[in-house]
Amino acid sequence: MVDTSNILGAGAIISSLFLAMVLLWALFRHLRLRPSNDRSWVNDNERLATAEFNDDEVIIRNVRDFEWRSGRDFDERWIDMKIKLGDVAKIWFVLEYFDPSRRQMAHTIMSFEMSDGTRLACSIEVRRERGEKYHPIRGLFRQYELIYVWATERDVIGVRTRCRKKSVTHLFEAVVLGPGNERRMLESYLNRTNKLSKSPEWYNTITNTCTTNIVRHVNEVYPGRVPRAVSVLLPGLSPKLLQRNNLVKIQGTMEDTLRNSIIDEKAKSWDGVADFGECIREQGGGEHSTE
Image (cartoon, rainbow, N blue to C red; front, side):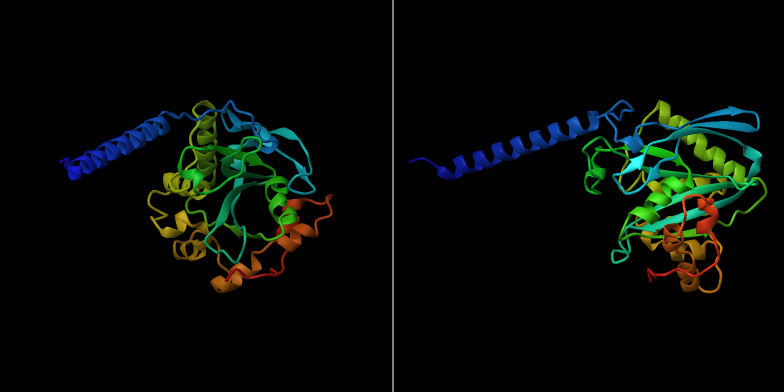
């Protein structure tokens, strides 16, 4: 009489071994994936910025300066900008809620203001290929490269405030501690930009995002200033962290600051002629609340 229990047991062992081999093969294949700067990119991610240093001056190549009429309708323009490193006067922090009803999800941007009023923003993003859409789960599995998008404010802030129906965007002035740290922050960003142009990296939804990189830059200039926190992984929750660690200027209560820092309606009122950065910084309260 055949002992079926032994047969079934052997079958289970074979199935388990087969599954283990498949998982090991998938893991091996995943770890062999390598990031690249040579793919068919969407137009707004097509060019990588680079920085050329010459003593106190730097030329930033491939600064994006698109004119956006909608998220799909735009005039493409790339420019080079020359600035003096010692002229950085202020740093601004942008917090964009994609949908205020989902408060955890947000995008963060830093913008550097020169003493003459010139402003240059850097948005750390997923670098998308043509036909590719972002999903946070896919972002865990080496599916997207990381890109530092250097752009004018009318481009990178304008497309968010003027072309996206649900998003709500806040603009805060950063608190900079210690003389010369504005310059050090800009240099930190530019050095990382040059590194990525030579050695591409994978975006990772947890470890290598817009906000985790901003925290690295801040802590490089001010060691330990931004602690580990859930709001680094979920930047929509960051306002309390910003207040608690004196990272942005607070006027009145945090609720007042959040309300008055909303810039969407100001951006929509821009006439296309005046300075966009001045327009979104005009005094006046916001029109929504994310609290």
